[in-house]
Image 1 (cartoon, rainbow, N blue to C red):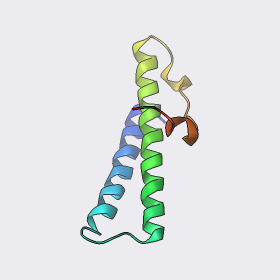
Image 2 (image 1 turned 180 degrees about the vertical axis):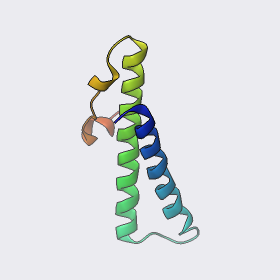
Image 3 (image 1 turned 120 degrees about the horizontal axis):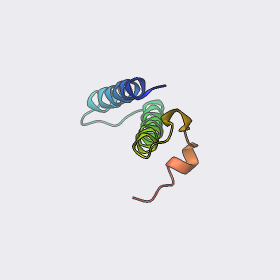
Length: 80
């Protein structure tokens, strides 16, 4: 997946996340919707991480295609 495809996928995931959140303003989400929201958030984190890796590799003269998606446990364990 190149940067443009990855950015498009991020946009699609974010759009779905926002639709889900907007559809329940003032009320709670069902357990299934909460699960989907969490899955979307994790997928977004992993995609953003991959895009950042690709950009960093390119900026340092390395092959961006050598970047790899990291496991959820790694991405979700980052300190902010």
